[in-house]
Image 1 (cartoon, rainbow, N blue to C red):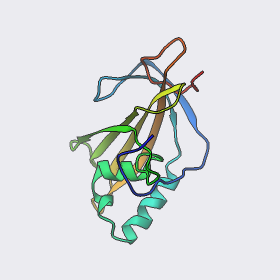
Image 2: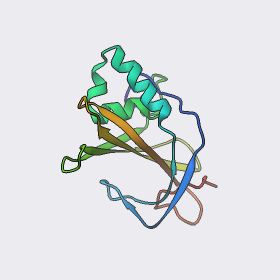
Image 3: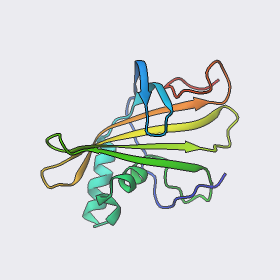
Image 4: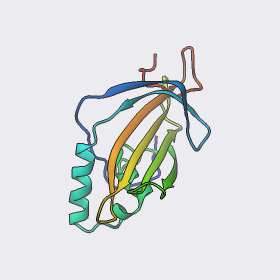
Length: 155
């Protein structure tokens, strides 16, 4: 399996929390997310601060920022799968907020079909993006529901 983007993946440690949604989230790609895990963001913001200290350009672009911080979105191993990315911003809020949605398809795994991430962002006082949340779910290849993304492990 070969991935199409390069550079580094940040490992995130901490406890995952699961949220179940009554009606589900409809993401920009038309996929339905019925439950997700909440991933701690402290490690993401630490990695972001370090990268900003090195003046790396990707820290200013919300989609590139999310791709660099989500484990597996950028990979140097030569494995390939496909990623779709979308950014939605609400400039009416104070401070402005944004959501980056990443979906990885084409996984060479017999049980896992796709992985969905949402990275929630907020503009800081310095006009730079800060990660305020990270949600993650997966779509299974087998089992009772192979259409929707959910937090539960695939069979």
